[in-house]
Structures are given as C-alpha cells and as structure tokens.
Amino acid sequence: MTAMLLGPATAWLVVFLVLPFIAIAVFSVGERAPEGGYQAAFTFAQYANLPARATAFWNTMVLAPVGALACLLVAYPVAYYLALRAPQRWRLILLALVVIPFWTSLLMRTYAWMYVLGGRGIPALLAYIGFEDVRLINTPGAVLLGIVYGYLPLMILPIYVSLERLDRRLLEASADLGATPLSTFLGVTLKLSLPGVMTGFSLVMILLLGEYLIPTLLGGGKVF
Image 1 (cartoon, one colour):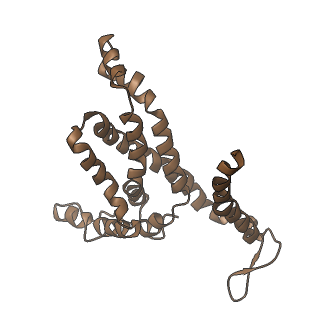
Image 2 (cartoon, helix red, strand yellow):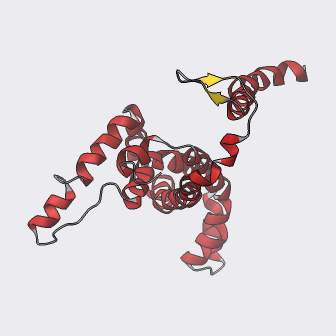
C-alpha cells in the first residue's frame, strides 16, 4: 500500500527532476558539434570555463534572495489585510485580484514593464517635470521590480493561508493579558504565520534561481 501511494509522486520526481539532472550532467561533459548541438565526448572543458560565468552566478546569488525578500516585504502586509482585516464580503474579490495576473502570460506582463520603464514611460514623465537622463530599464533595479511583480502572488497565497487559519481567540487573549498590538503581532501573529512565510520564500527563491525571462527583457543583456 505504501509503495502504491508513493509510486505516482516518485515517478513524477524521477521524470521531471532526476532525469533532467542526468541529462544536464551528460551534456556538461560533452562537446559542441561542428553543426551545433551536442556531441558525445568526455571533457571537463565546460567546468574549466566556469570563471567566465562568475558574474551571472554571483548576480543570481544576490538577486534571488533579495528578490524573494522584497516579495515578502510587500506580500506580508497584503496577506495580513486580506486574512485579518478585509471585510468578509470583499475577501474573495480581493483574492481574485491577486490571482488574476496569473491569467496573463509572464512574457506579456514583462513586456508591459519594458514600456513603463522604457524611454516613453516613467523616464519621459520624469523628464517632463525636470529630471533628465533617468534610466530605469536595463538595470538591476528594473530586474528586481519585475521579479517582485511577477512572483508576488506566489508569496501572498501561502502567507494568506497561514494567517487565515489563525485562531482569532489567541489575539484576543494576548490583548486581554496586556500585550501591545506590536507585541501581539510579533509574539502571536508572526510566529504562527512562519510556515506560510517559509513556504512562500522558499517557493519564490527556488524559482528565481532559474529565472531567465525577466533578466533578459528588463536587464537588456546587461544584467546576467
């Protein structure tokens, strides 16, 4: 019975996680064929060339956690309001507004930010009011903004679930015992929502480690 229950998940991980890693390992010790593509070989030349890719590696090690942290700082107040402060009759509508961006391709949403941050967008508005030569596109800041916008719903939803399950009586008990609102938040709300925080942070962080589209479009080939 245990094997039957674990079988589908195990097969999924083998096909979509283990086999791709094996393929990458095989390709990494191969060579580029004269006409392009993979040619069977056994060489460590690709690994010897890793220092040439150090910039991309370190940018990833910085932008991924910073982007996840920025998502968290924006997502937590939103999730807190939705779960504990928003009127019940509006809650589903507000949640739908959080999810709706997923109905549009990330490519289309990133292209929209290219226009907003490009020369005809915010820089043009800033130039009109006297701030000349402000460049927003093709910068780490543009990439970070695209990351927060693109992955924010993935951070909001796990935190919302943790906060929505929070027993409100604990908050009332904390207040009755003389705790300040800040103490109640730090000692009760934040601690009990940590599972959602860790889930959202891990999910966004893992996806950002392999993000390619946003740095390519908003970084313009200058933020690897």
